[in-house]
Length: 198
Image (cartoon, rainbow, N blue to C red; front, side):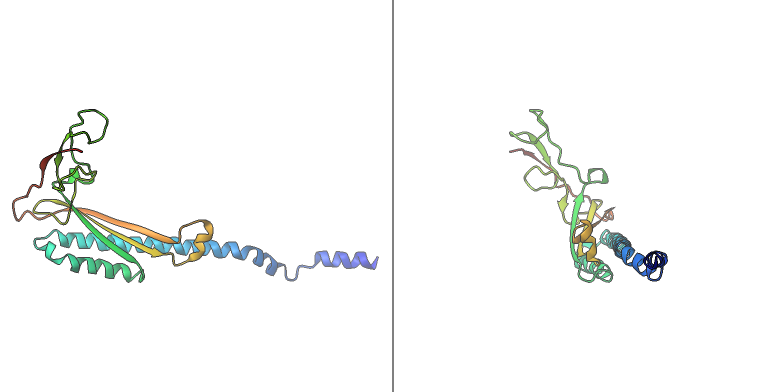
């Protein structure tokens, strides 16, 4: 009888129940909070990157912008690293004759209708590389009236490494791109030449 009474008393006892419940829930709660911080940090870093790219691209399209490439790249790098100090920042610029050609392959005549530029088929060498390219853009800022694709790639380690426990990669890579037209201070140069596919 005394044992039954003690058993009922232990079953009704609630002291310390909150601590046990918190211990069960805390790991999941901490993971959710850190995940929210990780996502928030990534969004903030991406917004910083996009703003820096837009600002640098506007500066690069004015006359004489080509002379200040390193200054513009350094400004973007500085702005990105103010948020992500250890980030690796890489830059590329490609110029196109107009906006509608950005990212498109060079034109070719598909004589054998296989969807590939081969077997001596004629093509327009839009970027002057001497070979048919999947992207017709020429490296660099181009000339007057050219459309310039300015791309900045940022890679950094996650600030909250617990995200890797959820299967997410340790490094985050973000890309900022913008396309603007160069100022019309000169005649637009053409690099296009006829060529044959190999």
